[in-house]
Length: 345
View 1 (cartoon, rainbow, N blue to C red):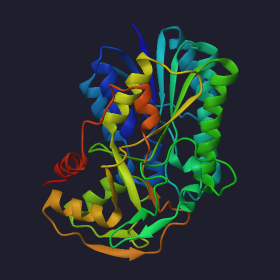
View 2: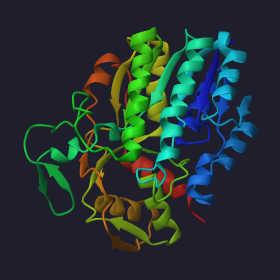
View 3: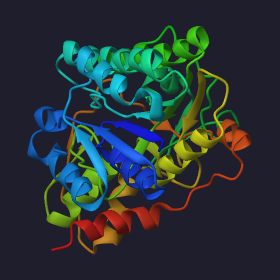
């Protein structure tokens, strides 16, 4: 039987991938040591998600830490000949982590451990690496923008359909998180170019869904809707006009499945997001959350995050051209209602 290995299996995309590929009849092995709980506290813990996966599915879970090179290598050594897909989601995902060593060891070091173990024991496998739009550093903030009433918007025809993969990742401030993720991104590409490993890099923006263990530091839409649904104050960083497109975890995983059945050239890179039509600002998202929950948001403004992108919409032209049968299955209204339902008393 083909084996799928999912790192970060308790996270939003990881858990969705586990359920999806187990549903296809594949054997799934998950890797997650609930580092989110250590980084973000009880609200960020994935322990209950992992328990749910183990209860619901024929699923094997390993609590190893991707920073433990020997443990990662041993896992692939045991299962390597049967592994056909590795979905690497494990990461320190917060943009403002206070510890550079944790960012580097998890994001860069952990990724290298996975890549090398696959090269040694499962070189035939497709490896999908979940990167981030933060690899582009501050370049998105160089785009001329209009300051509208509730949002920022591009000032001219350039980038009207979003930002594509040709944007430079060089000569820009990235922050420690972005730099560590860029190192992992480039290494995943290089294992494809140098060793012929069937690596694919996905660079998503805002990922969302009801299973997100969202917190203020990571998981914008899920955290916002939770705050509104439960009556907690929501802290607006900056003026709230920052724009993001949204993509549901199920649509991310269906994109990963497309890559699995029809891998591109080794080391290929795709931006991944909802694109135009799923974009909204923080202020607009508050209105959406109020409509979905039937409650009035309690908000307060705080200082903006250093290095925050003012505007990001994903140009999906490259991925759609390569995989024309792939498409979104959930719009913003569907996503908001799904998250709101989770937090109803």
